[in-house]
Image 1: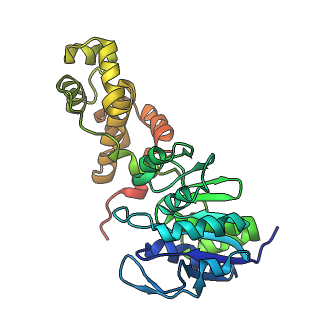
Image 2: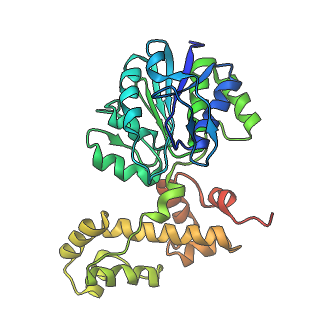
Length: 314
């Protein structure tokens, strides 16, 4: 069903410019009226210092909003308390509510994500899950819809979100046409894991556990079964498994898989080695095993990953 109602972008001081500009451009090209509103109706300044003119206070528009869109803010800034309050009220009356990036934290503070699935920028997924246990956080999703509430991953994922809104309201052909005009995927391949995976492997505090994980990274192709790692760490298999869960948040097998994926990602990005050779060097053994693991963990194939992230000579 086509919707032509008003889209209100609720902003406060320090809002991320691209979180605002990307979705607004998509929706404007779809013929939607997009209005910018702040808690007090005053203009705001974006994170890059660019002034952003607003046309109203969010509260003045309550009751006439079709889609309420909440962009994100730099992670070092606190969630704007004044914005949370107006979003709580306006969101309750809007037909549909959506957030871009860390705008999900605003929706969460406003209580609009309670009992729902949601996502946000991969760097903020843990924060969202820990602070708001009633939210089911999907750290790999680019966009999540739960009822009439939509959330998206970081920054440019706001464009993906807006294209999904256009497809819902105006049809697939309209969304496809705008995606072509923007030179972006209508639905990008893979999820956030292809961007975030290499940031997930930490360094343990326990000395024996550190010995185990360092043996993995020192020779990814070696035997890293639970029994072999436990022997190298001079620990029982049960104790080692418990330390992995406590300090790393993963099982030993999951850690080995992540370490191998991380190494393969680095080689795919920075070398011209054949995929088969990278599979051997990173411990997968075969190209097919690496391909299956990439699809499982990153949602994309090694070849597609290289095509997206390989350093360019341009």
